Image (cartoon, rainbow over all chains, first blue to last red; front, top):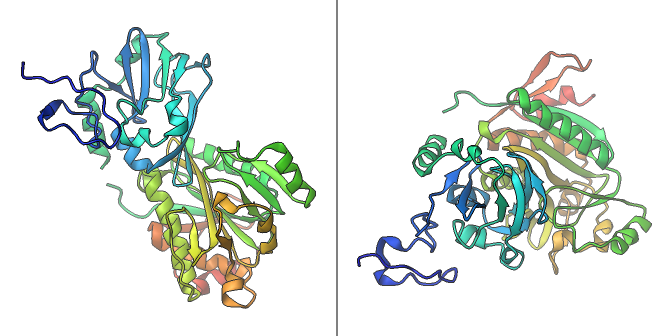
Length: 160
Length: 242
């Protein structure tokens, strides 16, 4: 087969030479990784990926660049209920605390505890290891209102 | 692309408690809901130590020790670690909508640093940035920066030591950075430099760096806005008697 399934790399590790287009987990923060479902995006630059009925949430490459090096992640408690657009935490970079907004309505099921020791994952691997929270999806129709990759790319271009 | 320069209202609060300034910042943050309403709040605080969203390094017993010194203690939703605000320190809270400028927090903080560096150079002081956010003269921090951003609206801001009693900083590791000190404009100039003297220079540097226009509310607190030129000291002296 022509495709190579790339094992998740350590942040900063060298990209294996023969992984070609499928290497999406390195510095480029490219979303071209093997995902079962495509990412949806909010206009606040968060992404959601649905996996097994649960939404995984993170911030986009555009967002992590605009923030600078993340030194701290203020995350919610597991079990916290969020309405779409509720503030659920903050990322700190360059002495700036930037709010995070919930892309969906649901309950927090998991937070990325790796970020306590390694907040820089949000910069280095924003679509994979830098995920921030996982949450239930109370209103699946909210996903329809989010942007797909193409729409989000267009949105980002319009900002620049 | 935006044509023209954004208009920023200068709001002189005088000496206000940290809590009162937080309340007022929220008022100005909320104004942005109905459209761009940029404001630059200027004030001084009675002695207060503040922490940011990373408040865990500062447990209550430590904060109680600081209260015993006669200072207030407050927690804020800004970035940055522990710092001190007090008389003689010019505190500036820009409440801007970054949509009218550049939608990057990293850019915004950089602009604040450059504004203060430009201000220092007007006093012939060579100030720099460092890997630690803030503005430094050598190994001593002259201005602390810590901000909050939500939906592109900024709050909190910068704190520039003009003639601050720097001994207040002895009781903390300012901004969590060991082995470095603090300084003030007065200390660097070896003469008294008051907040009043410094304000016009900050406003001038701000308009240059952010490419904006300043305005001030009418004295009677009415709706009319008096345009303020960005030409510098001479244009602003007539506004000194608030």
